[in-house]
Length: 240
Image (tube, rainbow, N blue to C red):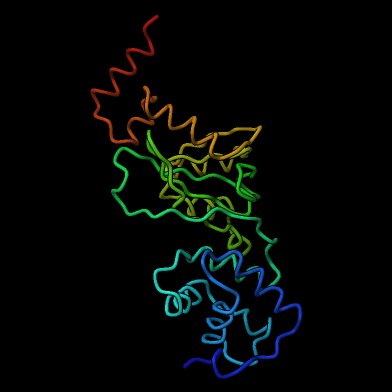
């Protein structure tokens, strides 16, 4: 038996609304389950002030105990806490995560898409989140959603955001400044700037076609192609 079963806490109207909004940012989690997790970690009375010290990892652990095998990441928990504290804008219909385990998609690359909603509509330094996709020549899977709200406390915002996606090989953005692009490149990530933005399915569909054809040497290297294959492509590109 838990706190949510034995006690009905009196919440302010604003906090009750924010719990509902925060639950929307957590795939497969209901407001009641989120409330139960918050009560486990913060206790009563549940107030905005009492939530200030709660960490994303702690909330994730509490949710795992209530809803095993959920699709909620620590970064989504951080975003939900931002909503609870009034720090985050309300998300709009973010896509659900796809199942993925390392090694599922041989020859694939990991792509970070700067986004505010569910499309490619973000500036690197100002986007609300990165949508993380694993992309091969034949399919794409959304494997994580990473909120950027933690950069408020970072000394170097560009460095914080680059570290947030440092397991990716490609970054797709609408815009990115010179210093930020340099930081991303130093992290081993190749930035692709698409000023007109667009639907992520369309953007990643174009990338899949490149992967299925003759990818440029830097991309072939990321995919694990042999040096001989990369040299053959370079020779083809240089041939009149």
